[in-house]
Length: 358
Image (cartoon, rainbow, N blue to C red; front, side, top):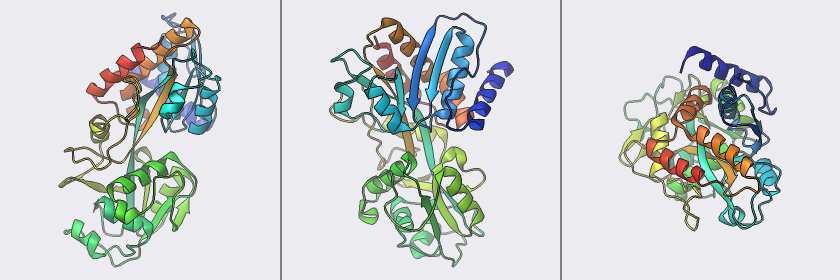
């Protein structure tokens, strides 16, 4: 990507972060007439806000008569507004259910339904701040017992067994979780519920189900882990900074977080059963043994109609979502928002689904 385009994206990100919670709109207006002209309205997942800023700035720069609005109002608000017919598309950290996707959609031609498109993969990580330790291995069972408060010392034999060469201190563990209900917590608890059900003993949930120290948002967890002693927490990978990130046991190996490893688990996971072929809701396989796959990810969706009452709206939605799914747009989001790009094989599947929008 050349310098002017890099600058455009950087300015878009700065605008969003400086106006936290505000709409992503008119971040850049290019001189090119382009092929897309009109206005699209979207809202929903705040996790997508920085990525949406880059995607919108770039497509508006190439299509000077196009306006794409995105309000990072939260996944629930976005889904509700889309179902009520108030949006052209929605962003959500959870897919519409099969029933929601096929019935009563105000924005869509009656009877045609909507599709879930997994276009933003946000890797999550377990961060630690342990005196004298700069690398840590964990399996799901041990992580579950730590965050439940059952393992309380860093030199517990169950942790030591996973880290035979680490000088783990005889110190109390301070485990920090999100105090607010969040998609991050839901995906973290889903990982523990799937991969260590006997140890975790709780279902996946937006609200953390056990006690312990808590903090507001990703930034609060990072601050608590950074400023505490012998601490551990879970956050979006893009927020981990210089903190030590635990490698997770997958099969017989420990897998460190990378963008490629996060994308691999998405490609290796099945789609949810009982859905149409173009409805790409993913059932993330947190128990995968796929070599090099990293199972702790949040998949965020863009939700669109299969058929719009106005063909011009369908053209705009199809054009915008095709751009978002492109390798270039996915790399931009990875660079500026810390996401993991879609794998090549899965990109083709998503683009086929988008092409069917009418």
